[in-house]
Image (cartoon, rainbow, N blue to C red; front, side, top):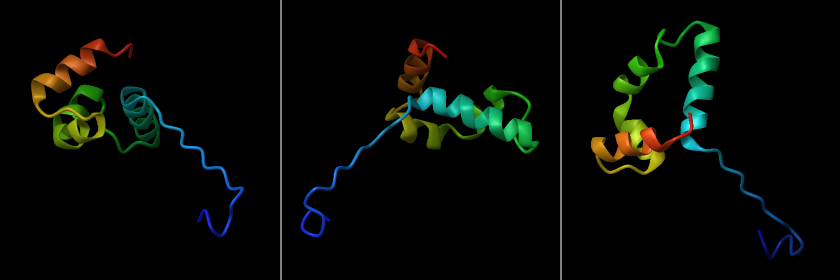
Length: 70
């Protein structure tokens, strides 16, 4: 890419994983295909959630979630 476009700038924007989780759940809930409670979604998707936030174990995930402002 750099050779083809030497003046190209690439910007990478990322969101806080917990804010993204809450936002996604709210959208899917409004569309009618998410569970009523966010905690149910989290319990059913622990493996994917741990990967998304970089937690190696459940206790690390819990610690990260407790320190989140959301």
